[in-house]
Image 1 (cartoon, one colour):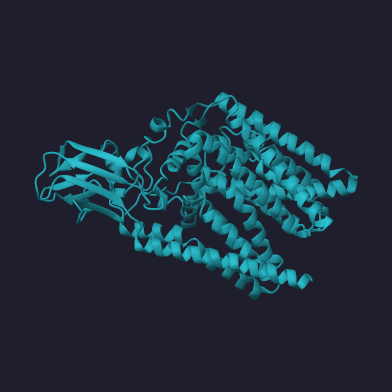
Image 2 (image 1 turned 120 degrees about the horizontal axis):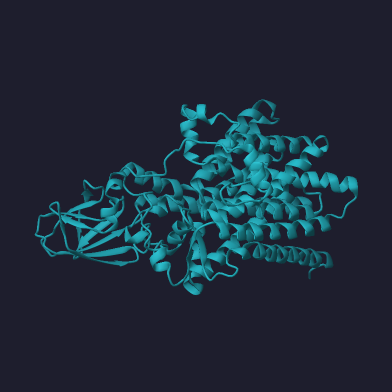
Length: 553
C-alpha cells in the first residue's frame, strides 16, 4: 500500500506535468491560431521537413522514398536522421499532415520543457522545484527556439533543444562533479546525433575546447577523462545507425552535401535592439529574456557561485564569437575557419547560448529572491505569462511581415511532395542536370525517349518505349549503394551515368523495370549495434538505480 508521502509526491509530479503540458500548448498556439494549415515561411526549411515526414511510409524497408521530393528518390533519410520525426508520420495517418505537425510540435515542446526541468533539478538538488520550472519556461519559450519553430521551420534543430540540457548536465557531471554519471552525456549526445548532424559538430567542438581549457585544473583527472572516453565510445555505438550508412554512401560515390560557408557575425548593437523587441524575423535573436538574464546576472555576479560565474562568462564569450566583434574575416581564410564553416551560420550557436543564459538567469533570480525575500511562485507565474504573451506577439508580427505559403491537407500533395529545389544528398555529378532529372527524363543511347513511370512508396515501375535489348538506358534515379533493379525477377547491374544517375543495359526479356533501394548489410549491422548499445544503457541505468536504492535503505 502506498504511503501518504508517496501519494503526495505523485500528485505533485502530475500537477507539474499537466502545468508544463498546458503552457507548452499555449506557446505553440500562435502557429495555427486563425489558420487551417502550416505557415511555411518562404526560403526556409518547413517544406523540406514536411516532405521528409511524408516520405517515411516505407522507411523500415527502404531508406529511399518516391513519395516526396518530386518522386526523385533522394537518400535524404541516411544523411538527415529520421527516427525522431517518425511519430509525426504516424500521426499524419490519423489526423492529416497539418494536425500531425502541430501535435508533434506541441509534443517536442512538452518534452523539451520536461527535460530542461529535470536537468535543472539534477544540478540543483536542494532548491525549490519552482526554479526548475522557471528555467524550463525561459529555455523552452526562448526567442531562438521560436525562430526555429515558426520562422526557419528547422525541425531537426528544434528537436535538439530536448537533448541540450541532458548534454549540459552530463558534461558538468563528468568534468566537475560525479563523473560516474557519464551516461547522461551519452544519452544527450545520442539524441542530438539522431536529430541534427551540424548541432552534433557544434556541441562536440565546444566540449573539446572546454576540456582542453579545463584540463590542468581538474581533480581526479584520469577518472574524469576515462568517463568522458566511456561516454564518447558508447555514443559512437548508439549512433552507428546514423554515421555508418552515411559513410557507406559517401565512399560509394560523391554526394552533394551542404557546403561550408564563410561565417559572418551580426552587429552586436543590432542584435541587442532586435532581442529587446524579441524579433524572430530578419535577426535570429536571443530574445528579451536572454538580455534580462544577462543584466540581472551582471548585477549579482559577485554573489554567484564560481561554477555559475564560469557558465555566464562562457555564454558571453560565445555571444561575442557570433558577433561582428570577432574577426571572422581573418579566420575564414584559415584551415580552422574552413572547418568551422561547416556550421554555415553563426546563429546556430544561439541554442547553446540560450541554454546558458536561461540557466544562469534563474541562478541570478535565486540570489535576488533570497535577498529580497520574494515569493518565487509569483515570479514563475509572471514569467510564464510573459513568455506566452511575448511569443504570441512575436509570431503574429512574423506572419504579418513575412511572405509564406500556407500548407494544408488539401495542397500538401503539390506543395510539399512535389518540391524539387533541394540539391542536398543527390549525386554530385547530377547537380548540373537537376532540371532534367526533376522532369524524370529517360534516355536510350543518349536520346530522350518516352517512358511511363509509376511510383509506389519505395518502388518505381518503369516501362520504356523505343528500346532494344543491349541498349544503354539512363534512368532518372540515383545510383546509391543498395539500389536494386530487376526485370521480371532478373537482377540488372547498374552503373553511374554521365549525368549522375543510373545506367543499365536493356534486357532481352522486356522493357518493364522495377527500381527499389534496400538497406545495405552495413546499415543493418549498424542498426543492430545501435540497438544493443541502447539496451546496454537501459540495463546500466537500471543496475545503477537499483544499487542506489539499496544503498539508501
